[in-house]
Image 1 (tube, rainbow, N blue to C red):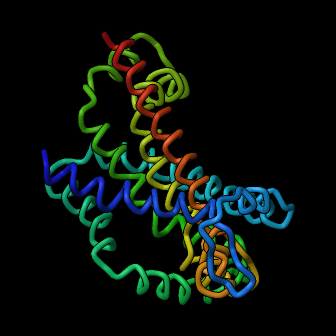
Image 2: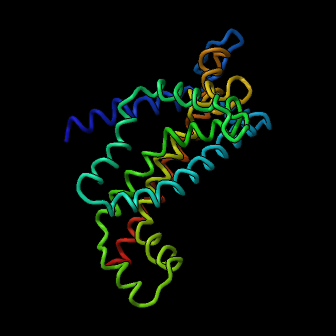
Image 3: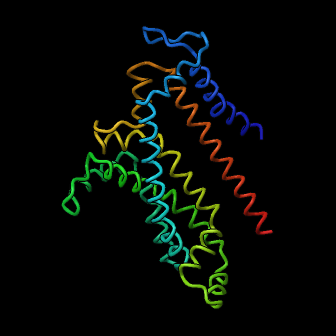
Length: 259
């Protein structure tokens, strides 16, 4: 286990400690930092301008997560019910795009949005950004749900239907509770990277919208305000750890109920 511990400490804990230290350093007028400790960066994040950027980013990430789950849940269910070559083909259609460069996928999506589907302008709009996010992160929602559906005993649904359960009750009383852990995992796989996404809002949205990714790029590379950027990253990491802990707790409750 020693290599694993070295990897975790060196590449996960180490950078987090560095960012945490920078978040409480003092920014000097010339853009450099002083080791004088202060919480000024965290206070500045309460400014309505920064709060609006954070809420706008979280809102977009939540909308993308919801859209991905709505599409992924039935897609994963029907994929798990396919047989033989059809199942392999469906899984390949999900995995093959992931082997393509992320940047190329974004440019391909931008060309698709230029077609003005339904006579609407999609490029450089929030709905266009949302579609591009969903297109790129949908596989990460489908795969954990697909794996969960593969482990499901098909006789459970047959028994529910034999006992007179409607399709709505099968969905709300059996399928969703049964795969709650997979739904939470899929939600986290989409929500966490979507919150700090930089390339998609920057390219698909142009310069019209400012999200957390753009904000961090501006603070670290342009404004040279490392304490402010580090403070926001620390807050996001703490929220992420809290969300992961809640998912673990939920998994424990599900296992306890099953027993």
